[in-house]
Length: 101
Figure (cartoon, one colour):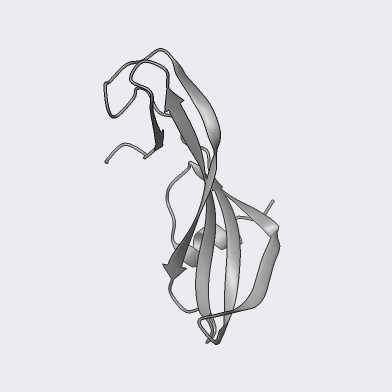
């Protein structure tokens, strides 16, 4: 599969994968826009709340819409699906964030 999307967007995060077959054109805020679809595959090492390493389970997903630079004129957005997690130790839920580099 071509990595043209990663090249165009200059994204270096290996934890984001793109659905290269699903790029749509739709109206967002009364303007014609391009929407690219991706998925974050990052899995946390520990709970950010209590730092427990055991007892973290998947707990659904969350959609985020990120603004990108314009591509050939129209506004562009990344619709990113992120995994939600639940910590059984402290009973909190969270979205995994990649480590800082």
